[in-house]
Amino acid sequence: VSGFGVEHLPYGAILPLGGWTDADAAAAGVAEHLGGRPVLSTRLGSDAVLLPLLVAAGLLGDDPDLAAALLAPTLNPLIELGAPAWRELRARLQDVLPDGADHARARVPLGRCAQVVPMRITDYVDFYASLEHVENFGRIFRPGKPAVQDNWRHLPVAYHGRASTVIVSNTPVRRPSGMLGPGVFGPTQALDIECEVGFVCGPGVVGPIPIDEADDRLFGVALVNDWSARDMQFFEFQPLGPFLGKSFATGMSAWVTPLEALAGARVPPRPQDPEPADYLRARSPWSLDLSLEISINGQTVSRPNASTLYWTPSQMLAHMTVNGATLSTGDLFATGTVSGPEPGSLAELWEGQRWLADGDEVVLRGRAADVELGEARGTVQPG
Ligand code: MN
Image (cartoon, rainbow, N blue to C red):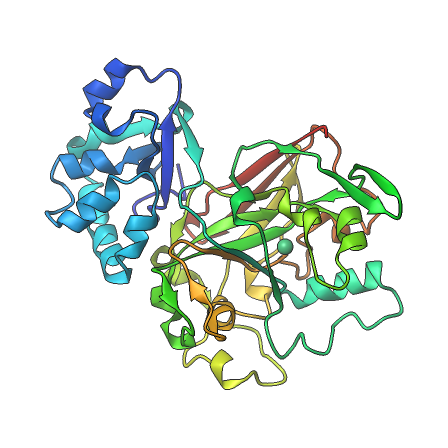
């Protein structure tokens, strides 16, 4: 499958599905690692490659810390080892995986796997980094008022989301109920999505993180769908920001693409005016040229690109820790809706005139040259 070759090698955590018998597990040599626990994997073509089996076969070297990390049910212990260990593991995988005979037993077709959120997320932050998204929302929902607030060009605006309701791709989304206006309680009548790029953070550390250290503090990239109930959101959010209109579900792709796999996607960020504060100025600033796609019921409705974002990932990481806030291993932050010439939300696409219906299936996809990001898929269930 194009886009999932050895130049990519994303990480995930899989659960073998029905179809996988105890005998299969024993034959594959993983019986002792299963027992209902997720198994760390990378993806090659349309197979998951079970990392504990590569360890057991002696293909990943003899570092006991790395071996222990790869036997864990989440990516957190691997992330905790730090950027040099990530680079070492990736280099080893790129070395051994092209020789199919060595690892045939470690491969499981994706059709026989379920996937889970691959890391334990302590904190989740959602930014608001797209200028076009801010402008579009202002025009549609606050006509006659300035779309871009006075602070917006001086710092990357964000809010803390709900880490425990981050859900993995393929998890259904139940239409949430809440207050939709004065005295009105019920299922949202304005269910929307936000097409976003998420960043999985590196080892835990007490902030601030200097902006030029961001590269070693970002483990990888995932697609994020920030499901949003706009009626709940617009009624509740003043003056403290999003709450129940966002916290019922945040989708993420099952696969996390190492930042290293996206080296070829780095492009200069768009100009910023005014010049940001010192802590937001990188020596070598970068943005990611990621072509994104929103598909509804099999039809592509928009194709935003992450290179149009105003604030960069490094600026977001530096900003969210500049006050001394702690970063926890595997924390997730997302860019906010990616809108440019094409929008990243249905509110913008349909101008507030239409929303998601029960049964609608939304798929977010992303690609950087030869690297295909894992998709973020979800179907709306009645409330
Ligand atoms: Mn969002």
